[in-house]
Structures are given as C-alpha cells and as structure tokens.
Image (cartoon, rainbow, N blue to C red; front, side, top):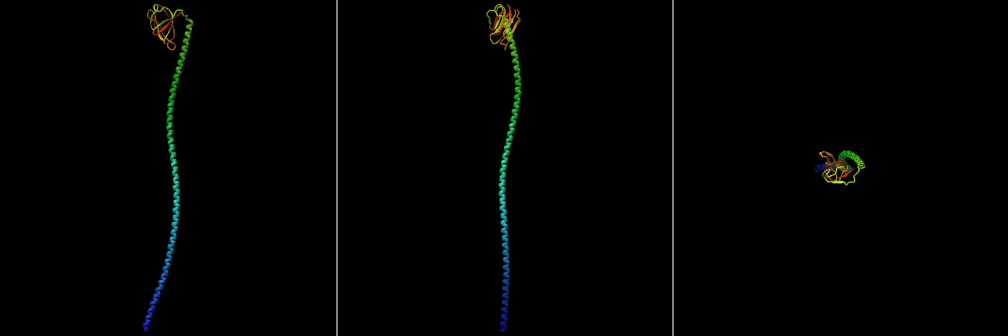
Length: 240
C-alpha cells in the first residue's frame, strides 16, 4: 500500500512539476509573445507615423506643385494674352506695310503721270510760245498794213463819183465799168479779185479781206478793154 501510495504521489508530483513547468513555459512564452507583439505594434505605429508624415510631406509637395501649376497656368495665360496682342500688332504692322506699298505704287504711278503731264505741258507751252510769236508777227503785219492803208488814205483822193458795187462775176471795162483808177474793197467776208488786160494777161491777182484773211483793200488802174473778175461782192471807189 505504502509503496503504491508513494508511487502515486511520485507520479502525481512529477505530473504537477511538469504542469508547473509547462505553465511557467507558457507564461514565459506569452510574456515573450506579448513583448514581441508590443514591439511590433510600436514598429507598426512608428511606420504609420512615418507614413503619415510622408503623406503630409507629399500632400505639402502636391499643394506646392498645384500652387506652382496654377501660377504657371496664370503666367501662361498672361503670356498667351501678350502673344495674342503681339500677333495683333504684327498683323496691323503687316497691313500698314501693305497699305504703304500700295500708296507707294500709287505715288509712283502719279509721279509718272505727273512727269508725262509735265512733258505734255512743256510741249503745249512751246506751242503756245510759237503761237504767241506768230500772233506777234501777225500783229506786226497788221500794224504795217494799217500804216500802209493810212498812207494810202492820205495819198488817195477820192472822186466825188458814187462807188460802183459789183456782185460776183466778170465785167468789161469801158462797157460795164468806166476806165480809171479805183480802190476796191470787199463787202462780204473776203474774196478773190482779178483784172485781166485785153490780151487776157492778169494785171491784178489779190485776195480782199480784213487783214487776217487777204490783204485788205487794193488800188489799181484799168483801161478800156480790161476785164474785171470778182468771186464775191465788192465795191469800186473811184479815186484821183
């Protein structure tokens, strides 16, 4: 009995010792596990804290990037506006250059026309000078003729006989017109006047007019047998 009890107690004590050892091991293992867990938690929290710090840093960087981007966009918008204004000014300058070129061409054309007109004007001026010189010559001729007429008027003594008016035609001296000395003057715009002797030879061949056309009045002698021919109306004034 005693041996059995002792054996039982021994076994029970061994088992108890084993259980205690196991419990102690478990407790010691749990303590290690808890310490490891705590360290892991701390490490995770530290990692989370670091991650949050990185996130905040990244958020700060992102905000800074957004601010820089907004500033860059605003600056780009301002640059675009400046570029548009500059392009508008360039377009205006190009338009002004085109207008200048057009005006320059027009001025060149006008200058050419002016030069041509000036040449034509010079030609006309030369013609006017020539005409004036010719008119002056005519004036001198008229003055000379007027002086001749004045001299004739002073030297010619008209007879008291009535003038003889003739229309265009041929007249025989001695039959149609008395022989003698006459001053013939036209009574129209001017006419050709002829006197032929008895042999048919012309002794007078002149144009009666007003000085501009023809030679004006004409004084001639005629005898019986002569023939007078006039192409227009004239008047014969008997003179001494």
